[in-house]
Amino acid sequence: MSLPAEEVKAIGVAARWYARLHSGTATDADRVAWDSWLAADPLNRQAWQRMAAVAEQMASVPGALAAPTLSKAGNSSRRQVLRSALLLTSAGTLGWLGWRSQAAQNLMCDYRTRVGERREFRLADGSSLLLNTDTSVNLRFDGRQRVLELLWGEILVSTAPDPLLRPFKVVTRHAQVLALGTRFIVRSQPGGGEVAVLEKAVEVSVPGSGSAMRVEAGQRVAFNDRSLGMQRGNDVSVGAWQQGSIIAIDRPLAALLNDLSRYRPGVLRWDPAIGELKVSGVFPIDDTDLALAALESGFALRVTRYSRFWVQVARADSR
Image (cartoon, rainbow, N blue to C red; front, side, top):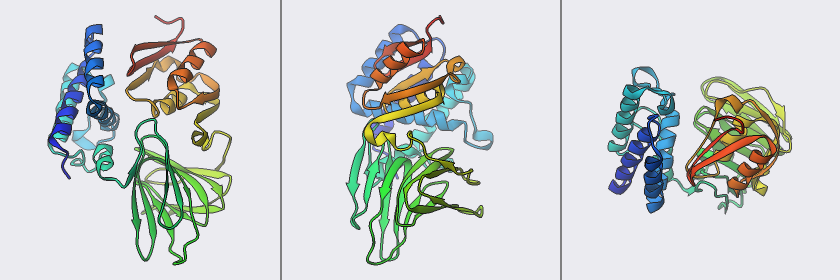
């Protein structure tokens, strides 16, 4: 599967910008020039998101091909990571290392949402599918089964009775979820995911591991490619994104900011020293600037906006 030439070019430029901005020597003029490039074309913004995804996933590439993330690497390592990223783009796909990239999958998927977008679809069997921000799904319905392949992101599924009695499954790269006449949420991330059941029940399994579990309404379970976690009860935060909010209850600030970053384009970074600060509140995901302003005023934080697409969070008294 090949990317169009203009997208390959844009991703290459994005990689060079990423390396420059994470070099430790970037100037205000560099950020202004980057901001102008980012705003010049929607393709540039998409390429920037893809480059950020590559950087986040670099650390998980096994063996001698592994590289540190750009933000922690020295100058020589940054150059190596940049060369790796450009090799990925020149190949026309980011899957040559043995893992399929989010970028390539997004181009060919059946259903998708952009960063910050939520969208509902009615499926041919009468089931409904709600996609959260930055989500990609493939659909495989045939005479024997109904399968949703969640490539990336988060979905809420409400299944409909099927006259053909076909099983309904959600498949991620780490686990499978068999619906048992139900309404449930599945989230898939590079390292694993989570299933939360709102009605009836599901069966969650990790292929090849022997791990399988029935999860009833009101419960949720995390998973990775090796095993299932312990079941926990749902709380008010589960599925709050349907109503346009993130609900935090004594949640580490780093986890909250990581969630907020899923709903805004560009880069949202924070000082690791504030990552464990416990935060409670309701934060809008359709206006993440308002959410950041609420954090700034309510938790003694300072939000520095280098541009619309580059935001840093730190303690208010830090310099």
